[in-house]
Image (cartoon, rainbow, N blue to C red; front, top):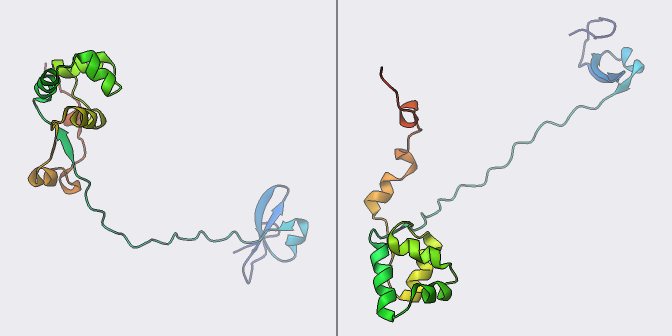
Length: 152
């Protein structure tokens, strides 16, 4: 390797020298024209903690006939939609859409409805169906999955 100032062949390691805002590799003699920089620390590799296998969280899904279950349970108790909405701190329009089947309740809403109406709206996915959702069986999306090719 050669000194970037004088061009002399370097016997040992060059010195990193900052000269006029530029860092140059110089010999011992040329390093006096600037400020010698210390070597940057080598990046440390992060320690990897031993991987622990986390058990899968139970996966729940809403029953297909959730709207009928909610409506019948509400009517059985003699509550209006307004009463049910007030008891679970939701808007009446949410109850209307759930009972009409236009909106499937999310997990939080389904649990509120289960608790207040004493019904079951959530079911656990079966083991076979959980295996289908595993990372081994998920493939990346292809162009064909996303776009429809129009034939002339």
